[in-house]
Image (tube, rainbow, N blue to C red):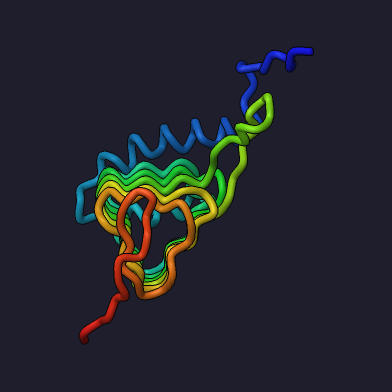
Length: 182
């Protein structure tokens, strides 16, 4: 017996969330994207209006794409560079002084390919304090970037990384320990 035909017209997101996203995208296009680069405080204020928890001194650049601000936490002095995309049907949490570089992609959701209708599966991403996600790196659902970890340019993080390590590659792996100099 053949599996049932998937209903590709239905969305895994409730209508209320779809409407909230439409409102957010419209608001973002006018009030965030058009704001001058140094207006980090303004963008933090805008994100807070939409439910984001943003600490003092955060730097969110105007070219950032945030799917759902109500699922975003940024501790003090966190930074998200232009062109970074935070696809967050589940929570994305950035620790103190965490950096997400230009063009990085943090993705908290995927689909269960073992089921006929490919239901959405969402898992939070946590980025530890003093961690740095390099440009064009990708972080997959459910991963935790350890405190002080550095993720190299273009890496694909498929599982959590240990604290104070330098990780790179596809799939991302530990290349060496990280030592800091004050």
